[in-house]
Length: 301
Image (cartoon, rainbow, N blue to C red; front, side):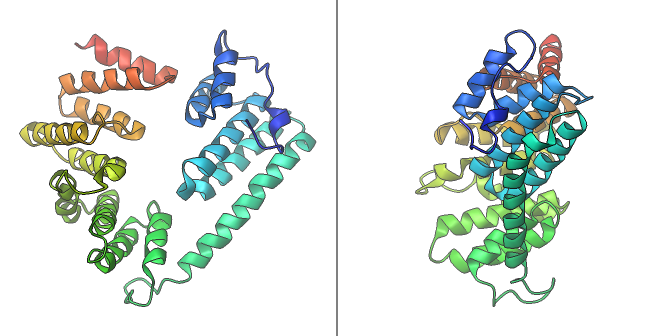
C-alpha cells in the first residue's frame, strides 16, 4: 500500500468521523489518492491541527503526483513538505517523520535539478527555437504551463510545427496544448481558433480517443468564454463528440466543477443539474463543500 519510508505512519485507527476510518482505509488500499485526500481535507478542516492526518495527506499528495500527475511532482513535493511541517507543529514526532521527509526531499531535489536542466536548454525569450529538440520543447512547455503560459504556448506551437508532417495526431495534440496555454495566459482570441480544432477534427482519426482529456479541456476553455446560443452549441457538440469517443462530457473532475460554476453564471441551470448528476454518479466520495453545492443546484430545479 505504501513505501516503507512511511508505511508505519498510515496504520489505522485514524480517529475520523463515524464510518470514515473504513472508507479512508479502503481508498488507501486501492491507492485512490484523490478520494483519500477528499476525506482527509474534510476531516482536517480549516484549523489543520491533527498531526497524523496531516502526514496522511502529505503521503497521498506525494503518491498521487508520483503515479498519476508526473508533471506536478515538484509542486506536490513542496506541498507535502509544508504539510509535514504543519504535522510537526501539531505535535507529531519529528523523528517519526524523517524517513518519509527524506524521501520527499530527495525527490524534490531530483525534480528541481531536472527542471533546471530542461529549462537551461531554452534560449532567451524571443530568441529562435530552432536549436531546441522537440522533446525538450514539449517538456519545457509542461514545466512552464502554470507560471509562463504564453511562453509555454510558443514552445508547444514550435514543437507542433516540427512533428505534424510525420505524426499528425501528435502535432494536433501539441497545437491543442498551445491553444490551452494561450487561453490560460489570457490570450483567448488567439487561442480560440486552435481550441476549436478539438470540435472539428475527424472522429475517425486514429488514436483520437487517447487525447480525450485534452479534447475535453479545450472545449471547457471555449465554454468559459461563451454564453447563450454559442454556449449551448459548443456544449452540444462537445457532448456529442464525447459520447462518440466513449465518455460523457464533462468527465475530468476539475472541468466538471469549473463548468458547473460556468453553467450557473450564464444561467444554464438544466446543464448545471446535468453536471451535478454526473459528479454525484461518478465519484467515490464528495467533499462536504461540494455536496452542499450540489444540493443547492438541485434545490433550484
